[in-house]
Image (cartoon, rainbow, N blue to C red; front, side):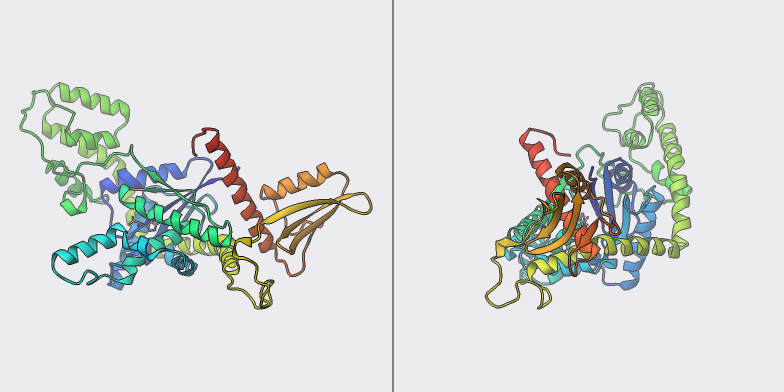
Length: 448
Ligand code: TRP
């Protein structure tokens, strides 16, 4: 079984509040522990550069946001839960360029953030592109590169990001159309059910409303903030509505179902607002005290996070990113002059980008063998099987991802690296997965 790749980009922007924690961080951490999922969490610092122009602030924000996710329980583990910094994969920018060359400018003109900047400028009578950097304009292409770099299947995002995922699909599709099937087209995963948390004033908790409870507020500040929450004027002893009470909603976001039911009863019985707030405060503090402590320990030792990020980035570069970029460069024609197809007049038509295939055959001595070929290049030869079935089983194990470069039965073609073979097998596995998905879709099956 191939895991489903779920990718989450995190823009470094200071320390998170309870709304971010409940709405984004906590569910993502929980989801990353599910079986059959391979998660990619990364700090989108290239993206942050379009708005943060103070180097120290960008560095600080990156540390804080990395520490926040780790404190909230993210458990990085190469191969299962990747945790890396976008700028540690400079190939992201190379892929951005390859995608820029297939991205429609007209499509980028319609990106929400860019259009909003245009509208603001027009309203104030300025040139419509005043103060708009090419970075802001290219933001969706950079984001598509993040996603397509790992052929992510699913990207959990808020509604404001859906357009970006659609653009990533569009660029990936155009690239595939021109150069062969290289990219999986990602699906946006919209978190409908996760609660938007109310802030101190009852409106959605958001920095722009200035009504937030910071995730790492020290105990005393947390208490003060909870007690500053706006409530109605019902006196102690008067029954209170849970519906519409943000004290209750906040409690519910942190309490167990049993605790929530008990609180519902207390509301009906006329609990005093001060008592309800006290209970809310203690419940919050119970969960947050350890998050807070882990956070303080983490930011005090940036070298530990740095080492973790470095380890993940270097493994990803080696195992995933470098092979993919080699494949893509070659696919678009950024390749050695000696590689096949470079002789004038011999260039293959664009659509003929070769897909790797296995070919089985019978040898002169009556035994059976197979080759893995890509266009007119032989990647792998294996001979001497007693039956076609035996050869077929071996092929199946290779397709399943079990390639051992040291296996004596397998001869690599001339100039072929083990990495080329892994790339070819991965390409085939992708194609298999796509077909399986299409079949499941045709059968009316649910998308994973
Ligand atoms: N644009 C996203 C945001 O503002 C952050 C982001 C960057 C991202 N690259 C991504 C999200 C890739 C998902 C996938 O929140």
